[in-house]
Length: 380
Ligand SMILES: Cc1ncc(COP(=O)(O)O)c(C=O)c1O
Image 1 (cartoon, rainbow, N blue to C red):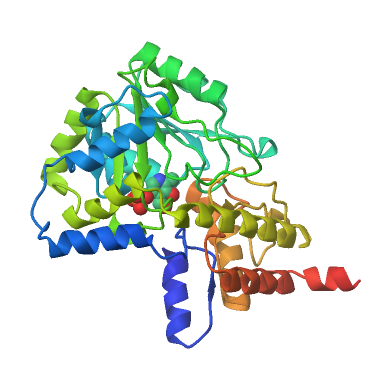
Image 2: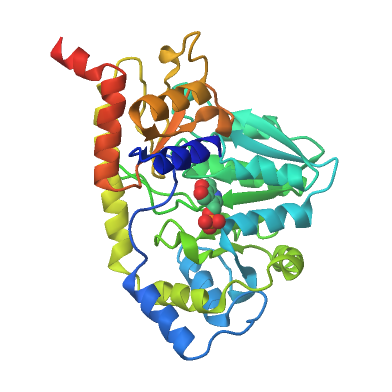
């Protein structure tokens, strides 16, 4: 928030800012989605829909995850106002004071915040930087107690790009089922995965652990549809009913004509989605090459999402003692906006988004390299 405020201030002063802070694809939304939403408006699909989402969209999502082995039908789907609302509704529906939720860190900022908003306690479990922050089962299982109501895994992870392998996911799913806790899997970045790796989805575990496995997803990143505010959750009918009960008092249904756009992209996979992933793969290579040239910056290749999460602690000193100060310095002295690792519960690192335009990325990285002396190193 502080970085965003400063970006806005600098822009008001006429300073050109290269924003590698926002987690938002620069691509426009797919033609198919836009056309379908416009048609829906023209046809008068502007009324409340069924609370849980249109039957077409729910069926489309069930079919989508059915391909990965989930025994889910439309009745197992709740369409929400973004994945953010899906996670929040789960928190409000299932958590009470005294409950604990196990969260591997670094973690996306809203996950612990929502648990706390629901009055429960967050048990953070740091994943190892030396292991590329890969999401491992054992430390998560070790952190579970009688009070554990849920484990929330986000793979590929914002901010680290780390992923959970299918065996680790399976072990966490089993541990959760044994204790009657939910495994909530935020798969918002499911498509953004590189170097030939495969995304492990809890959809493949739903048949074995039908009562406790919950999948949360989004149209925001996959289809560059952030402003449409469309997400979803899939799980047992009891989970859907509990989250829908919360939704009925908070947002009601997701926007009717936005759902028409989402139905269209599920029906007919738009080519823009694959093009976005390809662009991110190319930009990822560019970011890694550029960061590699900067002295004192260490960034193991992230397996997925569209963020780099380098360790910049070698640059800390009295004047610039932490990641927040480092981000401020980057912004004030180089005009480059990034996000401090401390926001994600991991000091020493910063997060750069490479879902931005090529020009933003290339110039932003050049300026960062200049500020941190990479040019000098190359020359010398
Ligand atoms: C890990 C993660 N989950 C969920 C979301 C929220 O997505 P939505 O736009 O669908 O609310 C984000 C957005 O940045 C995210 O990074």
